[in-house]
Length: 235
Image (cartoon, rainbow, N blue to C red; front, side, top):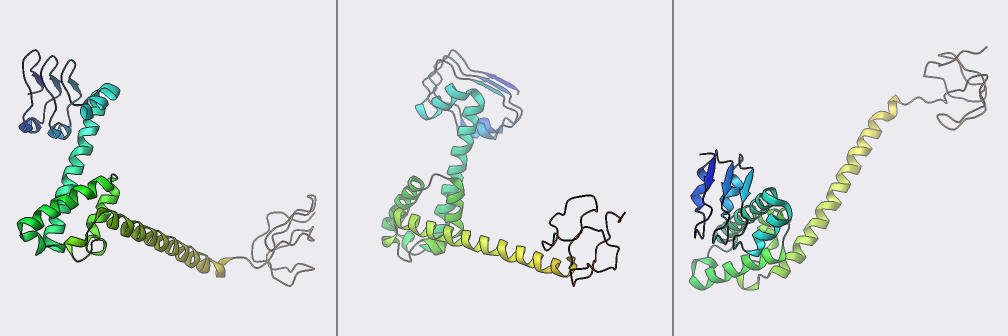
């Protein structure tokens, strides 16, 4: 099925199973009582147009639809789907890796749900949430009763700064290793200017040479041997 026409009827919702219609390209749900569309629409790669005019779409979906049309709505749904999967991943990580015993009780499970909700209020960037999930054992305190979203934010920012410093040090070490490896290959003399040109600064900043030298000659005022072939010949 490539087209779905459900317009002009009292429809209030689209089923999540619509995400299985991989060939779907067009949906007309205009003039309905539809108040939201399922996030599974974002998985339909062939979907190019959704007509939701004159519906009761909730504000969080209506705004991107009115501003950017179908593509804006689908992007919003993808972001919501991503946050949903990240929330599930964080819940499983905390439940089975960090607070396994505490979450086994009803009270602990309720506290864990509230904590995850607070975390997603504190962190809006998916990249930050992935970092929280990967480093949950380092970011969350050992006791569930001591865990707060604000404390995780503070610890997260400290870890991010530490990682940034490590990356800078790693790049500097790599740069220094490259420079150090090139040192034996660098010429140990100045490159000379032509006889007709005004003296110019080359190499190690000698400007007194006016005559180009051949391969193995020495500069008259320099104690270093020319290691680079001359680009010009003396007149």
